[in-house]
Image (cartoon, rainbow, N blue to C red):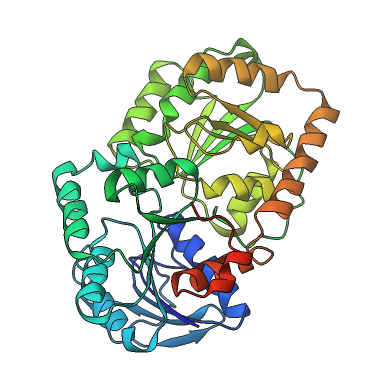
Length: 385
C-alpha cells in the first residue's frame, strides 16, 4: 500500500506537533512494509536538509520544497499531485491549511483517491475564532467540493470527533486513533525542584492561569521550586506573560527559557517534578507522552483528553482556573517521596503500554485498509466512530 502525505512542515523540523506525529506514522508504516511519500516545505529545516529533490529515508520517500509563500505552497501541491496516480490513499493533515484543502479538492475533481484527513486540532473552537471568516469559507468550500464517499476523517479524541461532525455533518466517517510516538531513550537524570510547561506560547494554553495559581500558592512561594516555561515567548501573548510575572514580583520563581529541542528537551522533561498543561482546549498534547516517557507525571486540564492520568496513577486531570491550580500545586508539593516515585513508575508504564507507535502501528495500517475498503480492517481497527 502506498500513501502520500502533503504537509506544510515535517520532521526534522520542529515547528509544531504534526511535524513529529506524521513522521512517527510514516516511519511505523514503512517498517510494516508500506510506502510513504511525503511532499512538504523547507519550513523549519536545518541547513543540512537537501531541498528540491526526492530523498529515500527510513520514514519514506520525501521531498522538501522551497516556496515563496508558506501558506500557498504550490510546489508541495505539484509534487503531491504528481504522485496521485500511483498511490492508494491520500492522507491530509490540518483542515484549513491551503495545501490540504486544495489537494482534497483536486483529488475529488480529478483523481478520486480514498482520503484520510487528520484534523490535528484545527477545528477546536478557539482555533476557528482566528481568521474566522476565512476559515468558515474554507469549511464551506470543502463541504461543497470535496467528495464524501471516499473521505474519512481522523480524530484523536471524542471532542475532536464532535468538532468534525459539527463542521462536516453528523454522517461524517471518522476513525479515532490517539497520537502515538516513538518513545525516546529515558534520560537518567535526577529530579530537580521545578515544574515545567512545554509548548507553544499561545492564549489557548492558559499559561496566565498557571502563573496566577502558582503565585497564590503559599507552599510554592515558600519553597525552592520554580516554574520553567519552554517555548518561544517573543510574541504578544508571551510579552503579556512576562509583564504578568513582573507585576506579581515572581521573577525569581518563573523562568522563560525559550525553545528547547532534542536531548536537551528530554532531559528537562526527565528532571521536572511535574509537567503542567493548563490549556483551555487540546485535541491531544503530544508533550504529555514525552513527559510520561521520561517518568514525569503530568497535571493536565479537563480541556484536554487526559482523564487517563489519574486513572493510571500518573498525574492529575483538573480544571484550569487559577484556584484549582493553586490547590493541586499545594497537594503535589506535599507528596511524600515514595508517592512521587510510584507516580513516576506509573507514568513510564502508561507511556510504554499505551502510546508506543511501533507497538500500535497495526492500528494505522488497519485505518488505511479501512479507507481503501479492505473488509479485514474491521478486525484490527482501533476505533471507528
